[in-house]
Length: 193
Image (tube, rainbow, N blue to C red; front, side):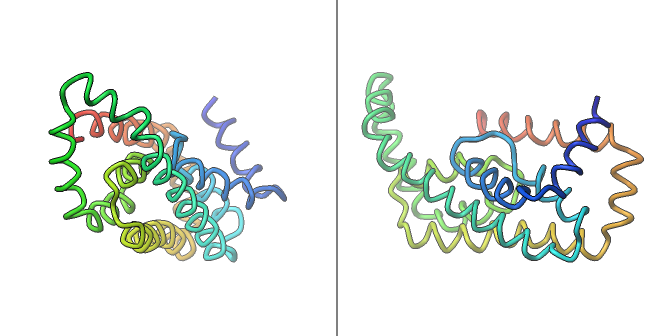
């Protein structure tokens, strides 16, 4: 089953709609979708290494624009949904302290988690909910998401065939590590934030 999914992804990466799909996945992942854009980006670069930098740029633009949407969700929907829930459970005062600390280190938080496999949508929504300065948010997002996707592009551009061979020979292991990292990010959210 994993082999068929991998083969399908590789075919989809070479499809004429792959670039708009990459942009869309990058956009929605930054605001509400649980699957990272790497599932599209990596096979696309492996399928056409000459376009690695272009694909990284598309993923970065989609992710940053999706991050703005996530920020707006946090900014506009927090008062309608989040604040009443905090008040109901008696956490309104604690959230204000959290928001102050978050905004003090906001640029570093956005940058750090924007580079890691941690679900970026949590950071975008939290940034809006706490009212992090939008310019700080945008700058940190562009730098971190660009760094993340261009590092992936660079590694696959320069070491593509050996990495592709490694993935294809150890597909089960690669898939297992991916799933562990994905669920590990969600568990980290629960216990760290």
